[in-house]
Structures are given as structure tokens and as C-alpha cells.
Amino acid sequence: MRVLLVEDDVLLGEGIQIALTHFSYSVDWLTQGKDVLSALMQTDYGLVILDLGLPDIDGLQILQSMRDNKIQTPVLILTARDQLDDKLTGLNAGADDYMIKPFDVRELEARIRNLIRRSVGRRTDCIQLGQAQLDTSQRKLFFKDQAIEFSRREFSLIQALFDRPNQVFTRESLESIAYNWDEELESNALEVHIHRLRKKLGGASIKTIRGVGYVLVEEYFT
Image 1: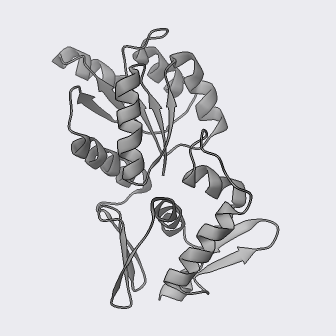
Image 2: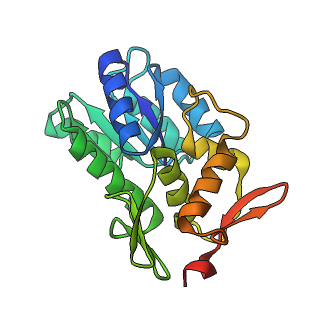
């Protein structure tokens, strides 16, 4: 899952990016509010984490602009504004959740998972596909009496594929899921990840659509 973090505090931003990367998220980080809309129009993000006290534009203005432009990406406000009126204002402006600094990163990650579940219509952290169950909280796949573990990028890819079985993902879309925009990407990196996923799941689990991309074969898991 790719996340857009909007936070001007450098130490806090670095800490959040490192922590969420550990939880298998790809995190793009902005320190200026003016860049948010263009980033959202260029990249398909699963979530925005938005500070309100930005140096150039108030976060509430950014949120309002998103909703005015029909950008429905879930937004988690992360702010030091701790008054009830501030929280109500943020939620009424279109935020999906509101969290106050300081915070525990485990709670932040739990709230992110909750918002992602809601955005795709799931009630639990588990994605059931035939006989396979992907637990997004443990980041493991239970299949054929085995618990299969993944690297960070492998898990980002397998979660996206499990969320949309039988849908063809382009190479570019999968690369954007697995990598931040500031990470160096080798030309064959995606093929290496897909090869490793096939070794763990079975060769027929992911099909190559020549010249287009890859698709998770739902029938394989039934």
C-alpha cells in the first residue's frame, strides 16, 4: 500500500516514514502543502496522512481542496491541535480519522489498517481467497497448512493482488505500490519480486500478461 505523508517536522516525518516502511507501506513524504494536489493527481495513493500546521497552507485547506476536486482518497489527520472543536472541524471537512500528537506508532498503524479496510469494504484484517487467507496485521499468508511470510515489498505486492484478484496490474502500477518515489529501482526488480512470490505460492498463482503486466489467478486458490 502506498501512503502520502504530509508533515513539515523533519524528525517526525523521518520517524513516521521509517516506521511505516517497517510495516510494509511505501511512503512518499511531502513537507509543503502546495505539492499535495499534484501528487494525488499523479499517483494512486491508498491513504493520506495530513498534518494541519504546515508552513505554507493550512492542512484544512488542502483537505477541502481534495474534496472539492472529487479526490476521495482516505485522509487521516495527524496534528497537535487537540481541542474537540478542531477535531470536529477536521472530520466535518472530510477527514476519515483524526489523531493527536504525540502518538504511539502502533496505534497509527492500526488506524491506517482500519481506514484501508473501510476503503475496500472489508471488516477484518484478513482477506479470504478460496483456501488462502492473507492476514494484513501479521503480514502472513495462510495456505495449504502453511504460514507464508514475505519481505516488505513482497507483502505490498501480494496485498494489492489479493485485494483485486483477476485484475491485471500494469508493471508501472505494481512498481508504484512497492517503491517510494525516492527509492532507486533496478530494471528487473519487479520481475525478481514476482519470481519470489511464485516460488512461495506456486508458479501458477500469478500469471504474466505479456506486454501488460501481471494478474493473481483466483481459481488457483480455490
